[in-house]
Amino acid sequence: MSRAADLSAFEVVNQLLNFPEAIEKLMFPSRAHETGNDNKGVSSIPVDILDTPKEYIFFLDVPGLSKSDIQVTVEDENTLVIRSNGKRKREDGEEEGCKYIRLERRAAQKLLRKFRLPDNANVGAINAKCENGVLTVVVEKLPPPPKPKTVKVSIS
Image 1 (cartoon, one colour):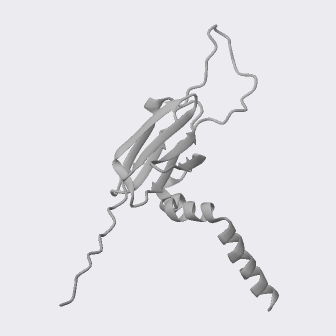
Image 2: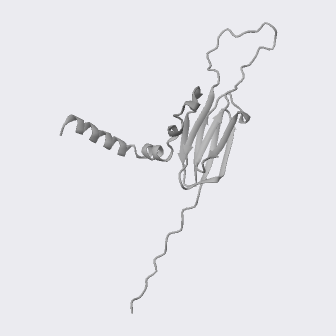
């Protein structure tokens, strides 16, 4: 085998061993919708996605944003969209003559994240809450379809 063949075989084995990550990329290819020029200046929100037996739970860090600054919608029947207008306010000094002597925290940017939901996601049963700088979005799963019954027919 050539070195190139060894490398691609290594990549295939590596992808198989990273099975949960590979499944997550197939189910939630979030970057596919963010390639257009209309999203210039838009920051991506870091996310953790938990797949439980009954629901998908998205955890997003949104420091400095309140629930009124964040919009959670479903577009095109199965695309979960999370966005913010990026208007986090800086604390002003209460007394006249106050000024910042250091600004290290990034100013809020517009945030956008899109996730294509799997077929078993119940888009009619999504809820979200924002507490302590973390947005939690819960998408319930639809019950599995009933298994088809096999009926034995006797031959006469």
